[in-house]
Length: 95
Image 1 (cartoon, rainbow, N blue to C red):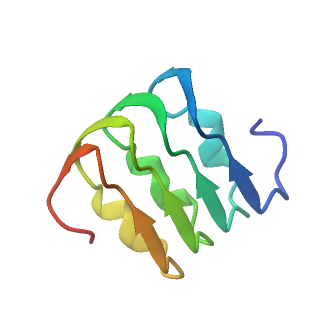
Image 2: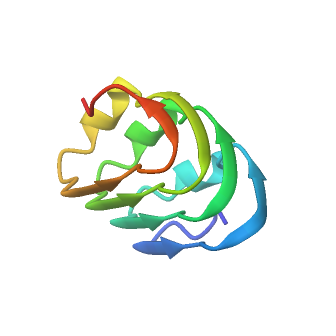
């Protein structure tokens, strides 16, 4: 998926077979404006590589098994307008 360099929107939701960490190749999609990964079974912490997605406007991670805190690198996504992390075990506040 990381080869789709001009992709602006990516949605993958309602699939409990999607487990583990978010694939590193997703962070190569630096043109993404909308990333929707809700209602899956992703787990672990959100990678600091999320800061590479500087064009993000919408990030939906709700209803997964994420833990930890939001990385400070999320602050590099200066166009981010909408963030959904409810029903996860992510703690703290957005940078």
